Amino acid sequence: MATWLTAHFALEELACTEHREFDNTPPPEVVATLRMTAARMEEVRRRLGERVITVSSGYRSRALNRAVGGSKTSAHLTGHAVDFNCYGFGEPLEVCRALAGSDLAFDQLIEEGGWVHLSFDPRLRRQVLTKRPGGYGLGLPS
Image 1 (cartoon, rainbow, N blue to C red):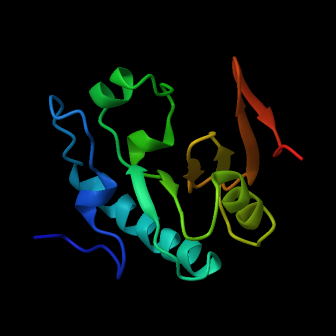
Image 2 (tube, rainbow, N blue to C red):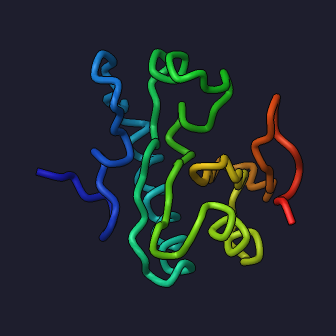
């Protein structure tokens, strides 16, 4: 049975992993952050025309984050970040363009190629980045 944090996002979805060898159970303080992140993802869903959002990564334990090659300072570690697709809206680049052009409050929006990375870290810097060979570049491709 799902533990719903909001109308469309469950705790289990925001802490899922295909790497079953890791315990990715979020501690209570992260669950509180995931509740806020889920509420922000409801805003994202509204901006994308109420289309279904498919989450591929949310919270990551340190061990899982290390195993997937995540940054040591990743917002996934605190439950502030979500990697997702919104297939009904379009490709990740289209989703990023829509969100970057909105007034949505976010810290980082990264077009990762196959998915969108969106962070709600409290810094709320509105950084828009694109994953490129060897690192990240500012802005979205034309």
